[in-house]
Image: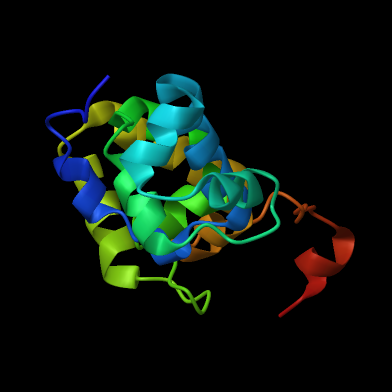
Length: 156
């Protein structure tokens, strides 16, 4: 099995953002696809290095990961890299843990063009930011109960 074509997605990946576990899983997936000898040849590494990478003895270097990604398709990568690791891999979360706000806002802006995304964002906002939304919209919180009493009628 040779290198896959149509791998432009690889160059959008921030390899430095991948965790050690994800790196090991990528190398393991390539080894499973190509076999032990095939992986050694494809990745240009020694047998001992592959063993050390797979068993977590040594961290898989960026250049080995870059080579390995050429033997996966984007869907395989997405199966391996999920959650926070994927956010780091695509550059939304930087190495220092800070967030690329412009990238997040561009993603949110897609909601104006995609009804499903818009609904997903709105459901998320209602579920997680209900009280903040009420304050922003100037709505009366549901915890306030208005009652009419005698003292109010006597107030002047």
